[in-house]
Image 1 (cartoon, rainbow, N blue to C red):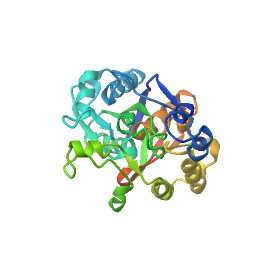
Image 2 (image 1 turned 90 degrees about the vertical axis):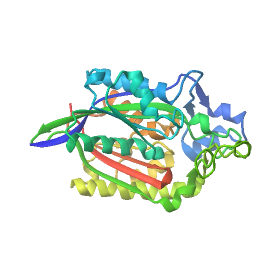
Image 3 (image 1 turned 45 degrees about the vertical axis):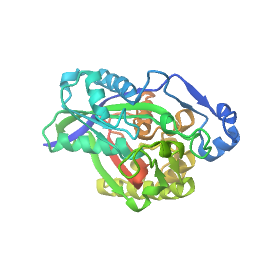
Image 4 (image 1 turned 60 degrees about the vertical axis):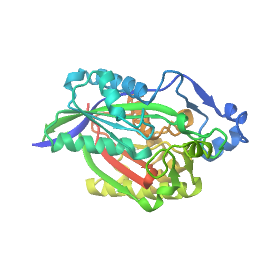
Length: 330
């Protein structure tokens, strides 16, 4: 009898407010044509008054629980991935746990854009080897709160959203669920995506605020090169561990950072464009919310059926990467 962590529910929450490329043309020196050509992004969602990382995470989590047909007390663990926490102390998962009415363990994972896939793999381990039955994994971000809207290299890229999934322990001869995974990090590249201010290395002060150290900065060209290489290497390693060939993958759900990265990674992995989930044009880069948002949209659109193989891949700050291969269940 095999035990696997299967995805049995999903949900999302995106703010109503939108920032289009036309809006950015009035903010910085850029154009719709330049943004679309370089990134594929046309608009992104932005959290409004009263919306925070936790409120988005609560709404996405509630939708996932409802879709899975379970109640809050059925959840054994909450794993929340974010790079934009509600506040430094306590962890954001504490707010989400309380908002959902959960009574279980809860902790945060901070691995940038790779956070949700890290969380999914971590939650799966508690099901397969830890004796738990259900884990809620949430990716939630309000990246608009840490952007410099005078920096055209970064401000046009990011958006706010949350996505969540319910993982359940399923048992059988060859049940659906997580088949293989890959995790990695190259800390020597930590300076490629960073927000320097506010930590123990550079505590918050009037000087750090004035210097813009509390906004995200990125070396876009180098991140692009590393992202493609890491996505391909991690995705390939995951498929190899599962004994699956690229042509057997029914849907590829990559981190939605840039359409050129997505296309290049899919091509090098040997995956046809029609088998790739893409929504970066409508949401931009939502970091830890990116993969669950794209996965949920694909599922809701009927792109997945029982037995399908789904490859998730994400690359984030650090530079960290993560991939997971799932067999979709009914």
